[in-house]
Image (cartoon, rainbow over all chains, first blue to last red; front, side, top):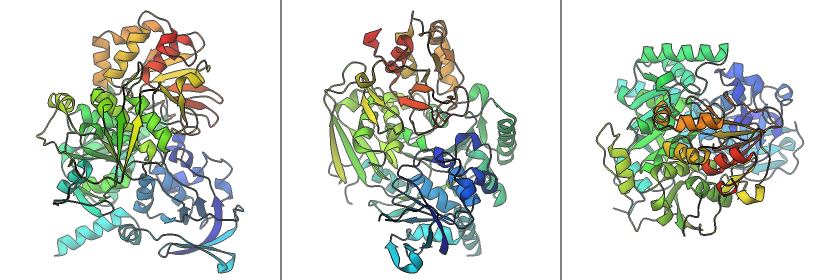
Length: 168
Length: 419
């Protein structure tokens, strides 16, 4: 789980209504929701984002509504990883459950120039810039979350567990 | 056996353990789950994709279509149609129209959310049920799909923060004011992933449905769950409706909590949360006279009979101000019928309010009261993030039901003493 991509910076307390506004909730696939990701913060943001880009947010990212459409939209738009100082619990679970990479990094990023290149190493909890000259150490996800991500999401893990139970 | 908080004891019981500790990851049995017309299409779609033929126990599962029902667009009509088809396929009870209700209120009204139980609902406000002395939390569509398949889920055992309320409730101060005040004090992540335990004499004084308004908004402080120790009021409330045997659970007096926060309410006046965070709170008198375009009374937070009766007592024989519009929405179809039977509906209609069928619509800006650019709404709901009720530059102020009712008469933010 190692990605290089352009970083897009967001402030604290971005709630899921802003990540995926209510008017798009009749959609239900990542692909359909993708073009509207984070449009409740800035409607001009989605067209600027390329596949493999990274979202770097502040505290309490994804607070509010439990709508899974929020991480689905980020995944569908090709966001490779969401890095935040902290995540709201439901968003965090939802994102891991659909295989969207997450990382907690409490340190401030000094240079928040939109679109600057970054490298993220989820399993080791690192975000680096400037070709590795600047390395910020965050926290790797809990073992259960890494396991869910390794199976591409919760349903993949549950299917594997069910298959194992049947086999034994 | 180490002493346990009520939250820890319920989780331990559902993990078939004697005790659990904060920070542990555990696998638990789920007593009840549910979904709505936002989450169900994704949840049931996953069951199809993964070839799961039936749910773990159809008596512990339901879906309620009410966010976008009755359909208000071709797109929402297609979603509601899909839910009907998939509910039939998986033999899941679906409530809509004359049986519709906001999800978390429906689970309580059905008598399937009982003291000592472990409840996981497919909506962030599932935490509301905790005021009945159960562990209740909200999750997203995939977590609910996994529960439908297995009857189980994983939890990180939360640390418990105890909120000890002291003092006397002043006139027009409700459970909603206590929770808004608490969120204002601790912030929107002030109880991040914690169990919020509400204790103290003011909590004992509150009606059960006011306690439910409090636990409802735990998520607005980041809480994993909120809980009250069950008491005689709780038992009287659930005994009438319980649909299965239940066993209350209590915490130990010597259980360790991570923090105890004392909140003195002696001087507390009704609270308003101004845009754009539920923690942006102030006393109602600081925003007294603020002009409004809409007043919305309802949502899962304040659409109970207790709330509607308090509102009707203020609206009775009065007329809503000409400069604004008012929408009153009960949480459930059963409450709607009772409001008609008790004559409350007549009072709302004679005052000039719209009295609508159960829906979350206006709270999340879906339908039945969406705000236009620049409009301002005073709402008894739970969130006021940017664009929550509609246009990105609309504004939502949160309050209790009696402030909403008085403001509807006055035409601006007001207290019942002003009319």
